[in-house]
Image (cartoon, rainbow, N blue to C red):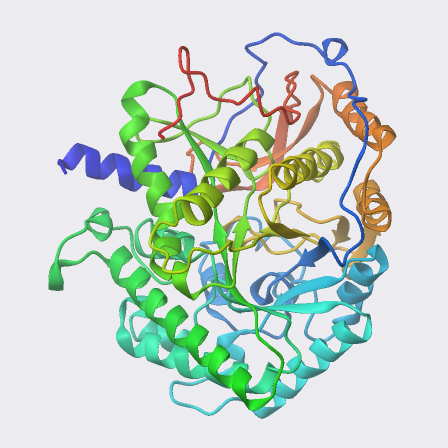
Length: 527
């Protein structure tokens, strides 16, 4: 691998994995106006009741828990998190630790039957080698009890992008000592919550954490290093591969342990992963090798390694990234979320099909020739205007329905997220919530129209033609008008305050026969 290619991959991974695309006001290359985008009225669709297909909502400790003195708080206080210091009481996040009822009640009101949450390793093990903090464990049990009291099943994540401070001081996930400590922590959680957890997610997006922390250095735990992604042998192995190796070993050990505990008369466990799957596309044919590398590293390396220790494949999908040269770029023809993802339902269709074909048809790396179910463990859009979110939600649910119709075993859909929260290094700029949060008014919640839509879809068990039509009409009525955008023009970082980007006049609704890629003119698929 030559030096130029190494630098290109480093920048590319920093860009694609921070989903870092930035632009100022732009106009569509297609020149399509709102009046040219006819509202959809192709008929509704159904998923049946939630015994057949469940709906859920997701959150995580570092996003929402107050009184959490974690590595992300230190990172923010050092000035490495955008849109944080300019917020009122940013360390409160969403007060989920001191007031979990607010989010739990909002979730329960929608009618979802699965609530995804996490436990923070550093809160529960505040010092290296220390026993589990009994008071913190008790409070997590109280939170779980509240969830179950609202008739929602629990999907629990053990590692969601947040290392304890002491683990960071030890060298993070590159060190086997941290791996062993996490396995010990995970076993304690399995013992404590075995009767209360319906779905275990051992790792959330492990490749994303490894790349943004240990390659790009834009998350806590690492420094920028082009050498980190080199697949060298032995002691020369890059940090990315050391991290993935240690996470892989942790996942395997905990999967086996959790299942071994089932023999004691407890409920049969269901253990999986929440794997980020982006739809990476090449702006030109010259960019195809870089996209191919990124797609394998981000979407498949970890899955390939743990596929025999999964009861379900959880997939997090948000959108597409367009790669050109050393990083991701913005094409004014495409619509973007506030955090820089291209709105691309077709990409979800293609990516989920690829995952299914890889592991349930070709059985890559698999011992058992059985069907592993898929779960959408995260899907959502940062959109403070709430103009795109209704159509985004509906069009991605159309994708799920189409995949089910093709025989792909998808068991549920978990939306990200309930309320606007702290979004990693982007701080509070991107707004992913169905519920808006006014941080100047003591975290006052206001339900967005999309909250009502989501609730109606859950209650109906599907989407009506009228809902589809109205959601797309909302988009077309705002073509050419400004909405907030957070990503900086450097392609990596986020702005302190959102700026305006014009809504694009492009029909991005799901149509499996109309993918973003074009074999003649681009963008191009890697494979």
